[in-house]
Amino acid sequence: MYTDLKGKVAVVTGASKGIGNAVATRLANENMKLVFNYNSDEAGAQKAVDQIKHEGGDAVAVQANVAKEEDIQKLVDTAVEHFGTLDLWINNAGMEKEAPTHELSLDDWNKVINVNLTGTFLGTKAALNYFLDNNKQGNIINMSSVHQQISWPHFADYAASKGGSKLLTETVAKEYAEKNIRVNAIAPGAINTPINAKKFADPKTYAETAELVPMGRIGKPNEVAAAAAWLASDESSYVTGDTIFVDGGMKLYPAFNNGRG
Ligand code: NAD
Image (cartoon, rainbow, N blue to C red):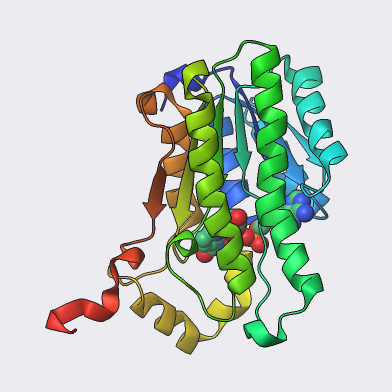
């Protein structure tokens, strides 16, 4: 438990399922007050909110498309109206579209960039404005990916969005460090969430993916949430502009194992 988190207020985007749901739930269990953002899956977000309230915590589910500036403002306004302030913003919402790059449609490219990169920019901007207007030493966490570092054929849209997110994190961290606003990223590897449901339902693909991980297994959403809780807390008070990889060693080039290469 991170006792300094008690009573603080967080917004987590894309919190209806997967990693966002696990992160928001973990923070609520740390006694934070939570805005669970969802885009279309109201039931997923509401189920988690109901459970938190049942356990004596405080949370609210709010619809917003992170690619729309007015929707992002709605999330800030909800946090302030319901809970009186905003301390932590987590840009988690994300998506991917698979296609060889020469066949990738502009529409799919724009969809992924709009959610993953522009959505992260809009959330960051809104949180910064609240922190600056209210003289807050706020905290921002961006859910990136190992693909901010590892290139990924057939997912140029996704890799480009996460590469962009990396330098957005580092730039904004440097820009607002003197205000004591911290900005960090988490780069998950292969995590068992709905985004991978189809892929991991096939035992062959599941095993092939696990082979890309030196630890030999797929990660769990709560293992990512643990990193988010640490970055949210004062235990990480001197950390900014950094990325924590939660990937079982995936970025360590497992193909070079056992003397190969
Ligand atoms: P997921 O598909 O299970 O969840 C994604 C969430 O984002 C959903 O709640 C979805 O509704 C939301 N979302 C999508 N578009 C949105 C929009 N326009 N506005 C608001 N919300 C929107 O995926 P996940 O695995 O939980 O992914 C969460 C984050 O973690 C993403 O940024 C993803 O890129 C990143 N990530 C995941 C993995 C993995 O293996 N699962 C690995 C690396 C990075």
